Image (cartoon, rainbow, N blue to C red; front, side, top):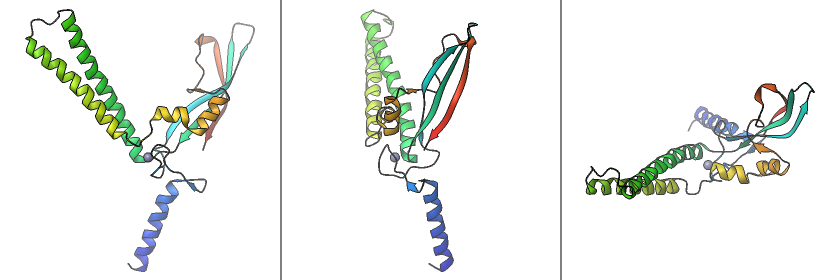
Length: 190
Ligand SMILES: [Zn+2]
């Protein structure tokens, strides 16, 4: 390795490091705990709190609140796995629903025009796919915490929940047209 090449490797190494640095600290992915967190792959959770409502006497209501976006460090691999797991969960639920439907068809004597063999086969196929896909998802997510887990257990989120913050971008509004939302703060926690 000549000098230039060594320099290039050094620079390359440092660039990849710099991408993952947050305030001089290299963050590890919170979901697997092994890989370094990658910029733009983080899991972001919007939260709001300090909600106060005011009426202006003319039937109008204004709501003010603070908003914070918590960034949970995440690596590329965990982000990809979580996206894939979401698809597998939906697929699994879809086939489970199919199995339940075919089961109900039997109970209520629907679809009797189709041969019993075929009805049994379709029921079994749906059930097996539902279970198989679900197991595949569990295997994929082995050692990777879920996003719901982060929402419950990531320290910054827990702290915000403790002081009355809720998930979401804004408080739910009942009488929509009359309300004016004043955003006090849009603070991104890093
Ligand atoms: Zn990870």
